[in-house]
Structure formats: structure tokens, C-alpha cells
Image (cartoon, rainbow, N blue to C red):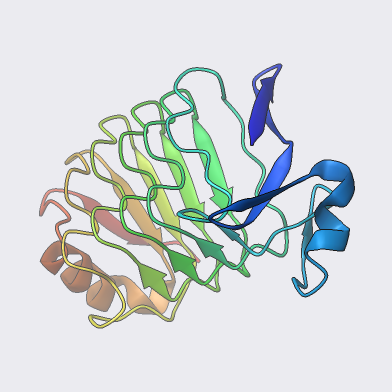
Length: 187
């Protein structure tokens, strides 16, 4: 589905259903009912039974998420050990279970203003994660899964909207963030 080229993933096909894959030239025609385009392909979500790039290992050090992707599904980037920084665009509403699990090289991740859900173990086994930027003001106990921040080191800094520091610090600690982690108002 993907091909690593000079450290950047190039989307070669899009999975429309579990049993159907369309090559680049046919993807747009095959997915006429999908509304968004990413790298010339019709893509609305990344993850399980959709477009998934898990286990890319050291082949990839840069991923660009298209402007119309609204969901990052379960295990979407799991075990992509060489990705250093990742920005999730503002229109992405959901980050699935274990979405970034095992991204041992990941040091900074930014979740945009549209993030409404963070799945279980989303950042598990990311020992080098130093900065999590969460620009969304929409998170609460019902939409952040248990253990969403389990496995994030104590040296991480979580930057959040200025008016959400107290509530997000409490929420994220209940969802697995280490008590020694810093939660700061930045946005």
C-alpha cells in the first residue's frame, strides 16, 4: 500500500474495503463517494481496514497527513520507530487505540484543534516522546480512553490551551499520564 522513498511514505493504493484495493490511477474513480483527497487519492481515514502504515520500522522518518483526513485509526502508526515529529491536522477528530504505540523515535506530536477523541494506549511505548501539543479544547473524560497516556515518560511536557491546564492535567493523569509530567498552557 505504501512505499518508502527517501524516508517519506508515498501512498501507492487505498483500501476501500477489506477485500478491495485500488491502484493510484483508479482510486479516485473507485472511491467516488469518498469526499476527500490525499496525495491524489480518495482518503478520509488512516488505520484498521482503511489506509494503515503500521510497522514501517526505520523505513520512514516523515509522514504528511492530508488535509482531509478526519480519523487516525487503531494502530495506524504503531511501531514506526523512525518518525521523529508528527503533526495531526486540525480536521482530524479521532486518534484511535494504539495509534502511535511503539513509535520509539517520536519526540514531538501535535494534535490539532479538531481532536475530539484519544484512544486507549495511543502513546504507549514512546520512550523518547518529550512534547505533546494538544490544541483541542474539546476533550473530556468520556472521549479520552483509559490509559491513553500510559507509557509516556515522566519527562514529557504536554502543552494545552491556556484555559484548560487544570482540567486537562487532572484528566490526563486519570488517563495514565505520569504525575511528574508537566502540563503547560501554551495555546
